[in-house]
Image (cartoon, rainbow, N blue to C red; front, side, top):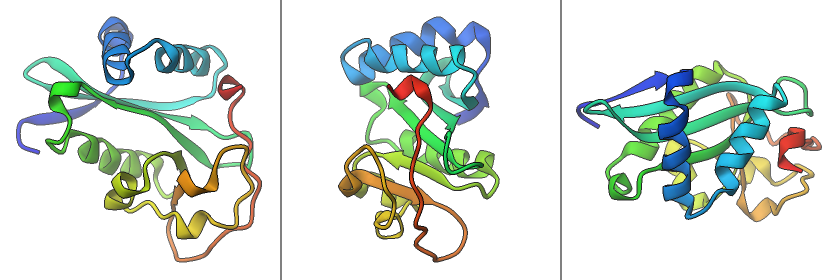
Length: 156
């Protein structure tokens, strides 16, 4: 996407990020999740999509409690007026680079996440507290790992 930059989250992004999360998800739950991930020390990386000095997208990568070394991608948010313009895909491509080859798990809409290289087929042997029909992974190779997913405590 032309003109958009993906940057590391900084503390001065807090208010804009909270507003973006509330707008994208029509409520406070996702913003509360982000605060809990930060407070619990589970946050591995936060990225902000910026266009014209304005935050138009956000994503969080947190450390899974299990398997060791795996990351969880949640939430991914795009301002409603910026959805459908490639902002989310730009964020996901950036997240893959930031993850540096670590396995990334996401719970979401398969049609969207597969466009960025995530695979539901490779996640089908995982054990998860969440529906496997919407669990996808991104990792090098073609294997189908057999692991139990233990999310950060903030996911409750």
